[in-house]
Image 1 (cartoon, rainbow, N blue to C red):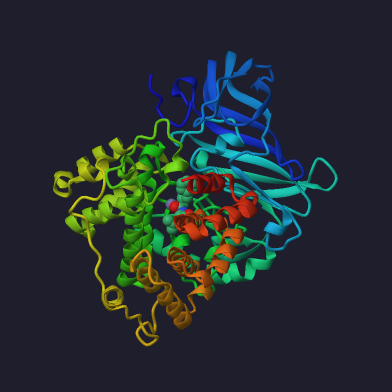
Image 2: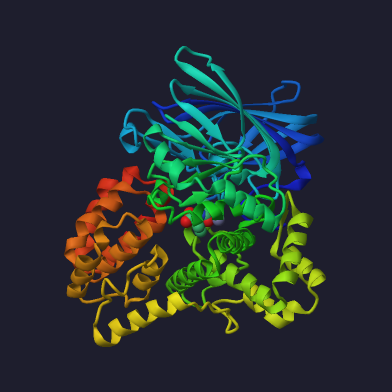
Length: 591
Ligand code: BES
Ligand code: ZN
């Protein structure tokens, strides 16, 4: 029988966990977590229970009465990991597993002190999405399953533990020099939203519902950058309904964090590359906030339906931006998204199955095919529907969608059925099935026009036809978005002398905005503009965000002259990259 979720051994016939209790004891010397996980089921069950695991050392399994349960590990699957088979002799509603994690657990990145802002204390953070929770907890690791959780986390003093949960106190740990932090997550969440970070952390309140966490050295900058989060939250509630998670706190991680942001409920994780000093990159915070409705409340049932999470969230993110910054601002972001989408689609090939919204990832590691397709193609499809039926009707649909499926997980088929029921005839009009099941971009794709965009495009056109670069006057007042569009619209490769003039006029190599900087460095590296290479090296050694690493390595590898540099920098940096980033870059270097 095919599995319900191609990325999990989860079988609902074995019972569905409703609550998880974790006891975690972290060893920063060995990078091992000594742990107990207790799963509570809705009702007592007997017989086989299969849990997802990967690289876990299982020590003991007991039932609700403390009786030993026989268990065995099945064959390891390269994508799914190793099924843990437990035999419940008597009906029991509780299963407890004593286990230890491996130092290579994919959900955790352990940082040595030099990789932190303070440089004195170690740090560890988790990243469970899409299917890495099983490397730290044996559980039903499918987004179809939601659990509430409680946790006791023991860490060496003076480190602080935070989780995607309410912090309910801390006290002396079981050994001298340790402290135990307690957590309770009252809202049920899919396993990929389980999250933990431990470091030398401090916090500051930004709003009655929002607090920012970071190392003390970056707290001030982080608090300034995200000071507007309370307004954003209120704007989002006006658009999408009540905020159901009580608090929206944020944690700014060390630069090794491999993503821009991660929507861990009650504690969004953010990369420090957002700290531009001018609030120009807060759209990532808007995106993670938007997931509080689209993704965390209404969740994709499997990674094949990932577009329901990300497509709706990019759409919701841009509605928040539009409400706060205006239509043109949101439109410029849509244009940046569209250009980046085309780059990703062209990399796959326009008729590749990975350009579909609804995917079939059975046997495929979702990390290996991560792209902007579910994000930006999803956004374009939803925008098309909005433009077709009008904003009023569309907002009614959105509200109904969120209310109907809140705290549930849905498939693309369920979405389609709901769509037809709520909006009869619209699917045919917009050619929804071509959008959802087809490859590439349908020809009724919505377009975004704006005056500012046209000015940028005119300057790009002038450069490509006459070789004339923009002047300072012409770019006076350009926002980071205009710079990004300009850099993304230039030919893939330009004359190194044009690079030099661009850099001399606009100081791009010195840009403090990572989106401008990396777009520029990619262009410079592709064009063989050598003076930019020291900065490329610095970024590759200092930052772990995959969105920046991958295109930079790709640009270096594409040129004979810089291929050796790519290998050399990777050798130096690889131990500092997240294991998932490392694997992704190894693939680029091997190509
Ligand atoms: N949930 C994602 C990050 C993610 C996706 C991690 C899949 C692992 C597997 C998060 O919400 C996200 O999309 N982050 C983006 C930000 C953005 C599109 C504004 C990122 O990290 O770049
Ligand atoms: Zn997202």
